[in-house]
Image (cartoon, rainbow, N blue to C red):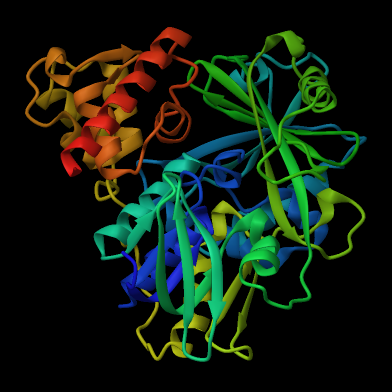
Length: 504
């Protein structure tokens, strides 16, 4: 691909880069997205998996951010109903932390700040006889219920890239930008793949959406002077066996003013998050013993059944790259994004800092609104008008599950549900002409089959490794044992070797 020229090169395959690539190519720009690792392999797959307004940000007077996020929640629910769905959250009341009137006022604002909402409003509840009261300690007698949404975070990134590719963008994973040289009329970028192949590409504009590496990109790769500094804030989560037998999530107030979520995820409960300053390399981040203890203690303040470090079956950590606003408390640093367009030094350079899953589409729209005129394009923004992401063209996933089971009666109900809530209407492509389970290819464990799902992920979703598939594409990592995961890795290695032979 040496010598290829694009209107725009996007550096970074997280949610911000994916959203910008999709928006830009939809406005008629030619786009190349470059990601050094797998799509969503860092911050964007290490979230609490929520599309939410950020209830706690009201106490920080971030009303504009909350309103923007709540408005976006409505757009995203319509855009990807197969990977984003409503969830009800329970907030047990502790009057010594926040008085009831304050919580009611905050929830009233939360219900109305984002304009017209389709999700149910908040209300107070008594825990006696309510399913959400069953796991709680007897001291908790009342609380509040409100609405937000759950998201398959890494899939949100992948689907944005799929849609961008369908519209003509080129997506290159496991490809690193080694140098980026600026001139008055464009950028020349040297790329290096994980196989060691190098190429030179050009673009009229460049987007720095490298997330935790955004400042390093400016310093070491693009050699640009700038005034920016990032604060890397580590957020860690733990996963334990399911702690309650209902579909409500919990939001727990902590004595230090933070909140911790406990979210049902099939057979497990996801608990998080922490807020800890991270001083090391962005790609080397892991939970520590203090964080595990903090999250266990947070749960034990509320639930009758205690948990400890020995109950943790999985954990993950990521860093949020937040623009340094000199706030002492990591929890108080703004989660709003900052976009800066630089045209003074030559060809356009757009830098992206901060942001969150919920507002990624608005960030992308704002970014391209600024960048497109500098590239001579005047196409209007389009992503706000409900264009579905791949697989999201059926507004009722539950009906789609029933339709899929009718067409493929041999598919077990849990498998049909998982496929629909991962792939939406594309689940039909995965199952294809199969007439029995044996037609789906080698069975790796759980309900993962080679010729159907694994080959689809390789062909259409840039999956290359077992981690890509089990952690970011399917979330089946806890359902395959070590030997099953090795068989999957062996299959992928053999498939990649066969592909290389065919190319040769």
